Length: 283
Image 1: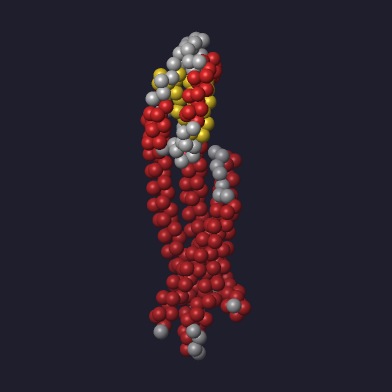
Image 2: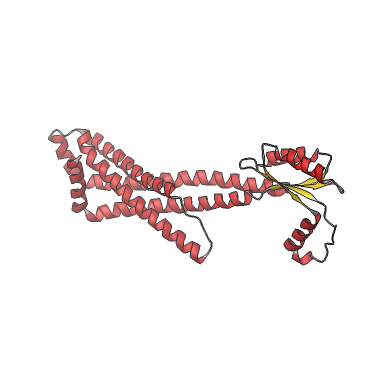
């Protein structure tokens, strides 16, 4: 292992321009993938924030007693899909309508809006089918006159989420494939530059594992450096966008480390494939 590490350092010193080119290419490839992943992450977080606002509003019959409303809220709160149930009095509904629809605040009169119960659902239970199922069960209670939950809005929200997820998977796989191809090409340039050295090593009896080891470590090291540079570039781009245009979220530390590790693995894999192909040719 010590000999392999020494060979890596010698390779960096022997061809610094090629090494810098390889690391830069890896960094740009992973940077493009990182930017796309960052966009996908923020789209997902935005949709999750919007999704958290999904609620069912059950309008109550006029003159409902306090005890009957309390029993209704208790029964609805026992649904496994329900996270929270909140009672909205007619006065509170009027104040909220005037606050949210300020241009029409003079139209609303006291007693214009009925009392209602707002139902918030748990994570994982906000898809259109589940929301409709809960709404139908709530509508069956005698105390409930009507139920509204924005059926069209929820359907569009989940349609957007499904499209974004599919696009993320397809484009993410495409970016990853392009990154592997580019990184493999740059590593192959290094292998070809040292093809004569590899041939001599094979002639003196070096095993395939002995020949591969320095290149694998070199590819791993270049992947780490390229991944770190890509992460730094992605962070800089995210900072500029957040300060100049719109507030965006950055990768959590665990995901950022996974990105650097992915760069290392891609670099090692591309190096292994390139060296293996060359060794088969010189056999």
